Length: 304
Image (tube, rainbow, N blue to C red; front, top):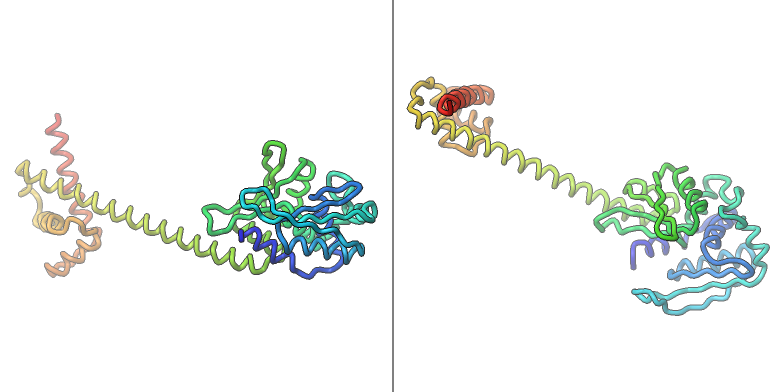
């Protein structure tokens, strides 16, 4: 079962007040087919049961339910619910005359959340957080309605955006934190816990990888710098000027050649321990830098 199906299954079983049921069913019917009759199709058994219960509880109407196997790639079962009675009364009660719902349907936050829940059940998909990217989208039919949905989502600071795709409009959210917030809004508590656990694990893993990469980059830089220092020392010996170095500079040179992969901190500790003469990291750097400057000057002279 997909993560989308798991979330829909969870929120379909939530108990909500009757006033919120009106808003939820409004979103569901708006995204089905309606006119003289009302026809709603879903692949989710729990969603089909919810829709049936909403019509029964709110309007004392019992939809006709038919089931058949779909023609999509997965060949999922399709549940079709048809209502042929009281349709004018139902549509009016659900505020479905126009491209966007009437204001009483989303008059407060609870009603708006219920509407978004119904919309999610009919038109949304959300990626499993185990996949490579976070993505929640609503696939809608007209621009006015897409803009209404975007405004409704952004009322809760979800940073949703609209994408025009062929003859459809996609309202989407890509930020992991915002998707988690949306799941909370529609009451998908179990899905939120699962989503957050995976998100935290992935964030921790990514942070660990970044730290490892940073550490490796630092190691590579240390080795590269040490190799350059060894080359400078060897160049001074080749040019017969090594003896011009002070005893302290020669001492650091010998230890650099002996420990070519040691960092400056490690080199200072080794020299201090083996010679009994304490030297700091900055002291090692200062002496190696003097060697570097001498080698650079000699190379410049030899090039001229």
